[in-house]
Amino acid sequence: ASRRAEGVLFTPCPSVGVRARDEFSFALLATLLATQPSHSSLLEHLESLAEHPSGLLGKLSSLASSLHASVGAESASYGLFRLGSLSGNHYLGILGTWIKLPAFAAVLPSSRRARGSAAASAASYMCTSSFEPAEQLVLLSVLLHLLWLTRPRCMVRHAVCSLDAVQRGRVWTLLTANASHAAFPHLLHNCIHLLQLGPLLHATLGCSDLLALMLTAALASSAASLLWNGVLGGRPKEGSLGASGVAMAMVAANAALYPRALVHVYGLELPAPHAALLYLVVDVVASSSGHGGGGVDASAHAGGAAVGYALARRWQRGLDLFPSF
Image (cartoon, rainbow, N blue to C red):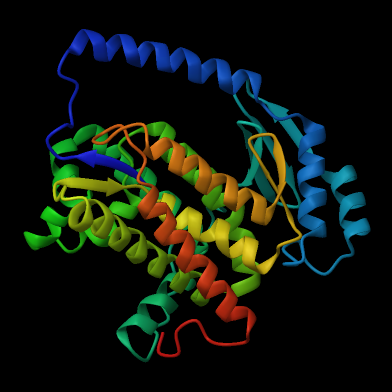
């Protein structure tokens, strides 16, 4: 999640904004070119998935899966990124990272009606979709980012969570802010983490429990931001937005469930607990860069991470995440 003060939303000097945008665009293109993954890195990624204890790639042994990947995997470079495929699954290689792309077949959920509580019905409905929960959040985030480009004032009002917004009755921002990304790099960073860890946790927890974890992390992320920035910090109009709290919940949950597993992201290979610690340290350093629109909301990230770790540990002990969910 990033921090944004409602009073500091637009660039005061258009010429400075255009120049900064051009410089950033050039830097982003150069970074994409320099960090495009190779075909061999795709094979290494598939091999790491085959060895992952979640059993994401099925019941084949890690050796058999590795051999299958080395023979059947294909990839092609498209300048700024690389696309790969294996057994009908498609992968995107970008910024030194490989992620599994959502399957776009059978987009609509099943017409079956779920019975039970409203929460259980909603969860069952979402879990009948061909998209996993993390993929659904990514698609929603992309749609909301397009709204930031076309309806920014509406998004400021309805998709940025602040103490002032909640006090004025816009309680839905506690959830909508978690799919809201005004800046494309922020969106790209969170989508990479969601699509990288989402399938692993889905294979472990199942759809309903992963959905419960994500929703709880979203609320905890927003609540932590309100407490730190609005209540303790005395900045009621300073808002938070982005799926980073949910992404950090996944990072922490993966570290709790698989402490010996390796995480491959941005060309780095780290044990899962070290990756979670590194992200939190980077958040703390980035949040000290200043207040207002340009900061990183470390409190929201920490809130999401705490919930992700706690719920994963509860699941490890054989307990339901939420008995009534």
